[in-house]
Length: 180
Image (tube, rainbow, N blue to C red; front, side, top):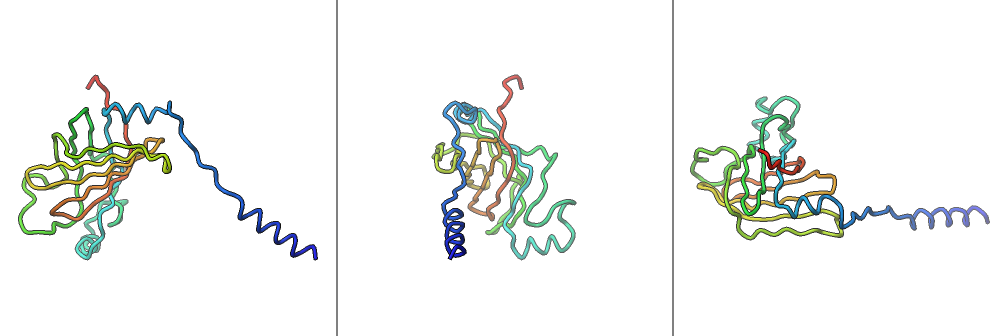
């Protein structure tokens, strides 16, 4: 008789346990950083869309050391996405396939500098992160960019393009030093 009661008690206890959610306060530094619109994202890795063409490149031994075709290490490459006031610039390496005819132009990576369209910045209280989205053009492509910034300053940037496969970057954001 005690065994079913004990099992029921343990089952009830396990089911009623819930992980606690950390809620950041309104005074957390992430709010001031994102509101300042003066920060820079630096990617530590790129996560390209894995296709047959990309797999062929990996099988040919053309993936950098310490990387896989689905996660390419970008340490020390000098890549960035900067938000400075109303202006946004980026120089991120691109790994993937072009979808339509034509060349990449002079820029083989994701490069743009200018004023974005449809810039939206909001804090998601349920997921405790900032989400920024915008569109921007350069001479050869139109970019739809989504940035997720977490309280620990880790960040994920997703870039969708009109003419190339999408790609995602993982890295960190930091305030831009005004003395530069």
